[in-house]
Amino acid sequence: MVGLELQFRDKEITAWSGMAITKSMLDHLKFDQAIASCGSPEQGSNRGYRPEQFLTQFMLSAWCGANRFEHGEVTRHGLALRQVFGFTRMANFKAVMRRFKKFTQSTNESVMEALYQWLFNQINTNGITLDLDSTVMTSYGMQESAALSYDPGKHGRLSHHPLRRLSPIPA
Image (cartoon, one colour):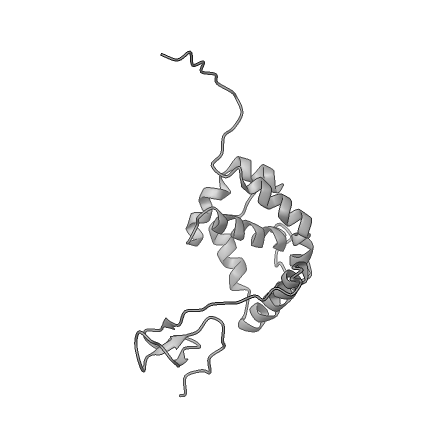
């Protein structure tokens, strides 16, 4: 048998240590400042969380594999993630959901327009073309903003196209 020595340390181990690099990138890009100036809805409580934390925490959960609001609880209880991102405490998934309910369609569009503008100002393309591919998503039932458009899978069905705003369904 090979001489293998086992040692134990009292330091925490986390599956999300790579998020420290993400935090460095966000700090370098001044992401908190971009969120603070994007026109997010006002906070209703003085005991609440900063708007920058809500969006960062939501994105952090998605980057760590969450695909439902409830899955954000896994990252919320990660002490190492809280320390890396400098959060003294993190909002539970219901608080995040309540925060997103403050967004209207017009608020969402204006906030996202400001964030996209900020993002693309960070990118130096030097003549590079950004090619966006999209998929038409079939809509079942009377979904908001669904319209008749080309859907190769279900001809004549209502659908959504993620890169193009479709006209509303006629009444």
